[in-house]
Image: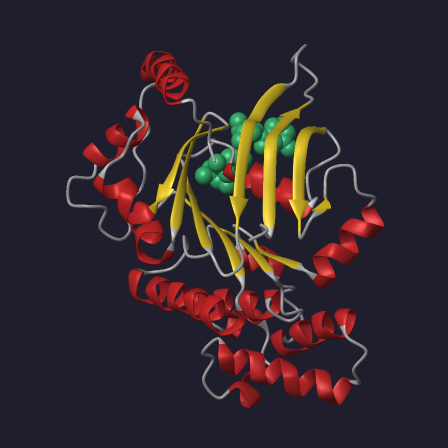
Length: 296
Ligand SMILES: Nc1ncnc2c1ncn2[C@@H]1O[C@H](COP(=O)(O)OP(=O)(O)OP(=O)(O)O)[C@@H](O)[C@H]1O
Ligand SMILES: [Mg+2]
């Protein structure tokens, strides 16, 4: 089965004014994600999760240097022109950003924002776009969607706004959905509903999902497989159940040990002291060499 998203040895560094060498934010990441699969990436703050997601979307800032290969449906994304990237984001891939409210215009009715996205991708007239926007709002669980079509974002709760962002991300019926912390701002009940929604999408439409979070409870709820990131590297990938039952990397073990209750919802990844890093990365290197295995 060919992968919807395939990464080989992906590296991202940022040129900064003060540093002679660009600092690597993502380092040597290799990964294949298949159709209909939900792949979770967990890692503490600053581990490179959003940078990796933005690299997939071709949305890195100009000071970023990308190396390696990122293929979406067998097409190379690294080095693709801005026009080609824009059309890929229109036709095949959508992203839910870490800050949902930032992706909605506060002055504009939410329904029109979704309809506009639809019209950017499909040659439909205004009336059909509106009908489809209302249907999408209903699909993500906004009650009375037709009546709420004309409301501006602040008339909705945080959870509803996040659903609207998801509805907009689904407007192009993406094959690949990259969701960067889609539930972080939400309380646990709404969080569970949004995750169920993502799970349903995958079941109903075969959507492939790259789900980024620093919440172990979130990955354990919906991901088929999980990758653990630390310091820009993908330390370990495993089937979700396998990872929780039998973590092979020392960092993963440290993480799970710090969450003895089996990662209840809302659990944040503890920041593991840097001194740990050198030792266990060395240990990881040895483990990998011994197993002859890499990340994928
Ligand atoms: N535009 C940029 N310029 C320079 N450095 C950057 C830029 N964006 C991110 N970085 C650096 O890259 C590293 C990874 O950041 P990233 O945002 O990917 O982390 P993250 O895992 O998403 O963290 P969080 O959980 O806090 O969202 C950090 O050290 C960050 O400072
Ligand atoms: Mg982030």
